[in-house]
Image 1 (cartoon, rainbow, N blue to C red):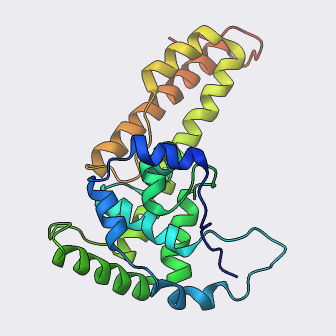
Image 2: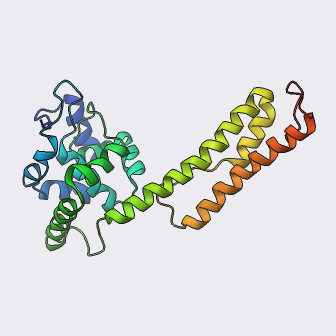
Image 3: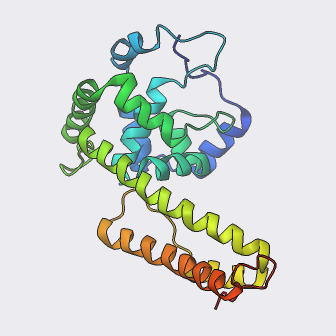
Length: 236
């Protein structure tokens, strides 16, 4: 069963809309222009077998608008999920009140690739983009992300996450032995994972370098103690 966006808004939602969301903002104009009534029939079958005792799925219009916002603002799934959670204007654009739960990046990706499917999503997205272009609300540079690219990015981010997880696990081991050295090494090796880095090779090298710093410190420390686990390791 598909979840419908609540028709009513709270006083707080109205206050935020009046005072913090400019009516002439491009996203407001796009939201007011679009009609997504065509969307529900495209995804209805994907929700027919939902367990009514489980979680109520997020309105597909919210998820589609999240994908559109991602492309308009040149964001990743992770970034758009975070910004929808943090920014009232983005919540308004995708159709959420301040009290609604924002979708996470996994839900957005699953909707695009599984709920709608590659072909349906691409066709619907291009239909919307054409309407916005003809209305003069966007230029001709907006494109949907190809599903092949999506899967490649997911595989790549998994590699990034694996490297980062190893770095963090080693840091936790260091922290148990010496908090001061942990703080110092954390500052030297801190790299934030990017979902879609502009230069993937450079980002990969940065992650490898950061993980290597931690690994080398652990290896040096392990060699210096000669098997004495209680010794104070040399992390320098």
